Image (tube, rainbow, N blue to C red):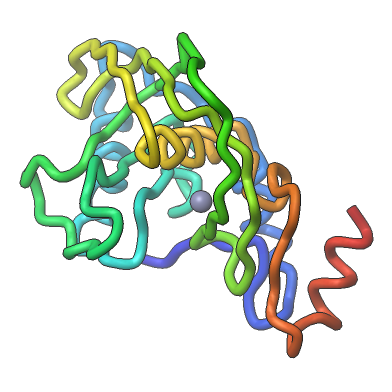
Length: 185
Ligand SMILES: [Zn+2]
């Protein structure tokens, strides 16, 4: 499945950017048929991937509050298998507690090709959400996983690493394009 991107091949994707920048809609509780379908579509888009720590529904063109992400194996990133317990799905997630230190680490995003950015995030968060079966869950995430969850949840509010980044890195050979984008902001 195609990933929606702010830009591609040194061209801004106006239409995709508009959806990526939108505040995504909640899924009705209990899930309706459309909500169930959208959750399944996101899971199917995430299963088999080895190029991402997580995926948010807006990144596949669905402006709904659903995210899927690896709950480990961040370094070797074996392809995700369906129902193998290596990923979490959160529907209508809400951060209820932020704790611990803030840490700055370089992040990349499938929706912002060619760049990376230093982003400061909390190292411990608590999240209230529904899982893919519609059950209420309450979970604490720490360390790098807490970072991944915050990154994915940002997508639901139309926020990307280019907005959070304290420093943005891009290849010299594409400076003409990116200098212009990041100076205009
Ligand atoms: Zn992202």
